[in-house]
Length: 589
Ligand code: ADP
Ligand code: MG
Image (cartoon, rainbow, N blue to C red; front, side, top):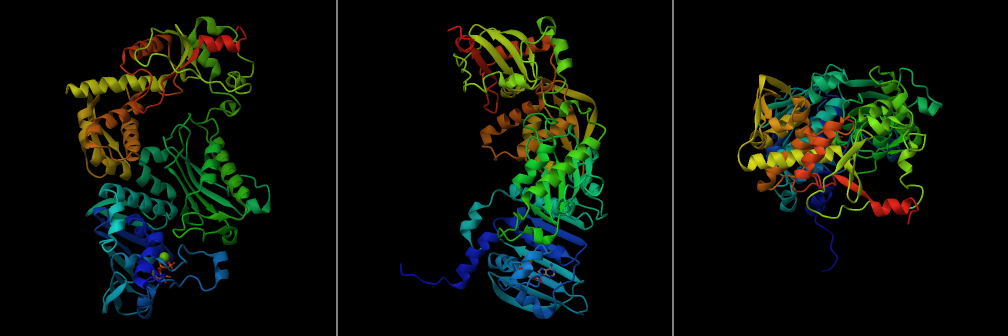
């Protein structure tokens, strides 16, 4: 083909792809415009996951009638004139691309009335062609309705996920902005039903209660850099860090609940996420992550916001200073919080070593044959010598009978078998046991159910209750009798007996959180996926001290499973330190 210049229509659709990836991107741009317009009340309405309709209504300053059409031109903005303005941007938008992009891939209607104007203006645009422009009544502010997104870009339409998934992205986005701007009132309606609202009181905690539920919100600790944390340099002092982080007792399996804002803009930043996690150093179990909602505020010239078309990444001029400020303030907030056991666990080494020894009885009461420094015993397994590889237990089928010797790091059961020493991950092992039991019960439709004396009300977060809709059936099949009870509250009447004594609230919330991260399973995998999620939540945790009897029982049950060597998620339940390897390491051979 000869070289040709693309038609403006094609060029604009291609450019739109950078900004508008999915329905949530539209909502994001519209929210940012509303916030930039100084609205204090924002109403978002979504139908069919945004596919059918997304409408954002604000009570901001509106657009003067004479400028309405211009607002839809590419690179038309009222927020920036000169490239030098980029150095001190204080608005969320500045690229002048959003409305143009949205209009080129949807049917868009904008109605607005600017302060001081008597009549409003309505403009309807289809695939970037202005169709109608008329005067009409409208309260001060702007309403943008975006219908049939990607109706003219079938390639994009194909990539949209099912409605529930797109809706989840939108929910996450609106709640994020509500957390970033606690002074604004947000309302989110999904398919005609209220799914989230924030009170606009100005207190972030009020928003957190709506997002996480009262119980979790009460376990959050305030971070406020104006209260104390010493700053090393004047630059550090110009970086403010405020928000909330979870007490170490509250944690999640993913980093999804770490939310960061830089100068009022939600950003993804692995470095800062890491800084927060580092502040929890040793306070959280392995592979668990805190909840955090943190705002970093610093002089605008210290951040480059123009890194990415969706503006979700920023560059810091002095990265280390920001990293330090986040870490220091989170750490201090955690330390100032009384619920944390004294400085002990913060020092090197694991937690509660002394208590751990006691229940093991016998031999372990004596000096441990490990190097004296507790932290050292990990490296004694060869990290500093040569790499070593645990052997995969030989027979992929049944386990040989094992003799339990004790527990290590409140995490592993140490056992002896014919081939050598086994380290069994107590959580993974228990998951496997529960999983096979639940599946067996499901297969014979004989799920053992334990009715609660009184139905328990559980308050879910909007995201969790959203997820529940998808999983209600499989939950029921598994033995969780759960019924919606208005709003985001549900009634739990019964739980699967197999899971034993669980914290119903935590378990249910945890299951829904985990499932929300999964790909939509194939129909015949739904029950198994649900069972796996339930086992993950119901199983003994790492960090739990087990008595000798409990360990023996667990190992016996594991011996009886059909696939004792992996957990339902495919990770190993055990590693074997074989005789041969031990002998080699001890120089016996
Ligand atoms: P940007 O936000 O980057 O300036 P947009 O395409 O999102 O670009 O919007 C173009 C312009 O339209 C904005 O600069 C602003 O002047 C105006 N505008 C858009 N949405 C609103 C709104 N909700 N209220 C007031 N003005 C708006
Ligand atoms: Mg904008």
